[in-house]
Length: 360
Image (cartoon, rainbow, N blue to C red; front, top):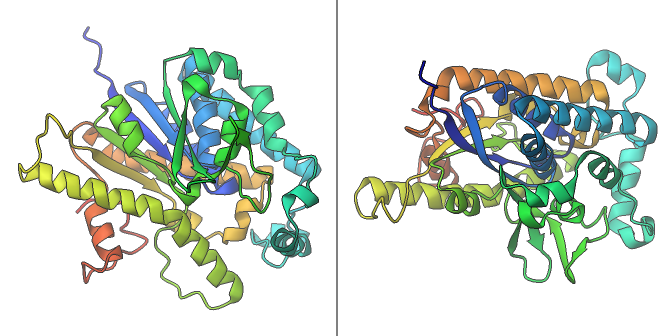
């Protein structure tokens, strides 16, 4: 009996704090597909954590091992939060399914401190629980020796403001932490004498370096920061939160615009397909589901909340596979052209949260 040909795909994982547990669910479902092969993973911030945990699992074993590693990592985050995190919901919030931290005294205090006091003062010993969690789970020396899955860990180079993608053959825990370093919360990781911050400022996540390195024709983006919010922000918190979402989506929208224009020129025959391979784009997004949670919940790491997000991610991936999985390798399933046109005021048809990830 002939072996079914594998559908090869690159994964692009966005950052979003604890909402990265949504991506945990997406990966968990994708890894159940025996005929899908992950060629490379590009990750930023929480996406970088998912990338290295999933990638190491695939390097050291198989899909089942990668799923177990992801479970171990995220459930461990939930256990650590139960012991150490100052961000907790009240009993009333737990009973009413309210996940907001906006009016939590500890949350407000942390915001105020982070704007007034440097992390070099507030956290002089550079304590970061994620360092211990990653070191306990990931054998970085083995990751550096493996060539089974290509990894692209996106960071912002502080000195130039440019993108720096760290690769699997050089990867260290500090490089992964740099990808999620918000400079007003954590001390800047120094790597080879240079400082690096959260990759979301410049690439959330980067698509082009991964595409060039692998030659894979398909990239699946797992989107955590809502691209579209139909409600007008009015309170100070809502305005600040929406500005953050726009900021952390800007680089991705810009890259989608570039890829979309290149694909258009390829389709018209103005660019050679041999020299400029066409990139099929796909997206699993949390605009509707994650959009129901306030942005402050990105700092909420209760185990029950993480498990809830995982379930939402699995359901989203399952739905996408049912609708679009057979199109891997043949065409895009994400209407990036309409989204980019609306965002650049080239269209009178603004995108809605319900239609962002669908193809006409």
